[in-house]
Amino acid sequence: MASDLELHFSDNGYVGLCRVEGGRINVCGLFRRPADSVTRSPNFLEHFTSTNSLRERLVHAKWDERSFAAVSGLPVGRAEPVSMEKFRLGDALSMIPPFTGNGMSFALESASLAVDPLVGYSRGELAWSEALALFQTATRKHFRRRLTLANAAQNLLMMSFCKRLFMRPEVVGIWRFVFSHTR
Image 1 (cartoon, rainbow, N blue to C red):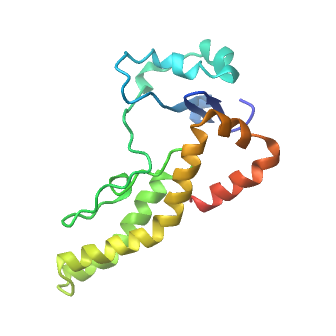
Image 2 (cartoon, rainbow, N blue to C red):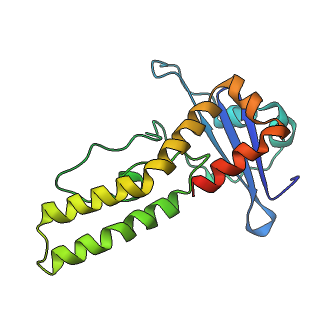
Image 3 (cartoon, rainbow, N blue to C red):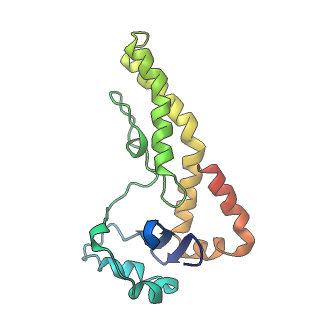
């Protein structure tokens, strides 16, 4: 690898590579398919090797098939409808887009915001509905800017024109701003 973390773009998504223990490399990608597409998904390796910059490197890679995992239909950037009964934490609250996000931080921060309202409820100082309303207000205030910026960046990065534009060296400052404001 050229560095500890690499990012490669294709027309329908992006692929990240990062070093992990034992000299191994984690390969992860996010790919978009039309919602009305009913054709069978290509072999997962076809997704990863559709990126010109990775084709030669990954086509000959030794893959650990025990480590394969995939999910579909990720609701990136969409907040779940506000529940009047449940505290929603982490991805159940809203999944932060993978490119800009730090999902574990999002989960821990939302859990932290739930503490005071839940303590108030457990002590009998707040009704459940009051505790939930306080939590929802706190999470909206805390995450609004981060999610708005992350969703905008994710949408732009899924557009071919924008990917080419934003990967130019002269706009690296934009990505530093996005990085610092989505964590």
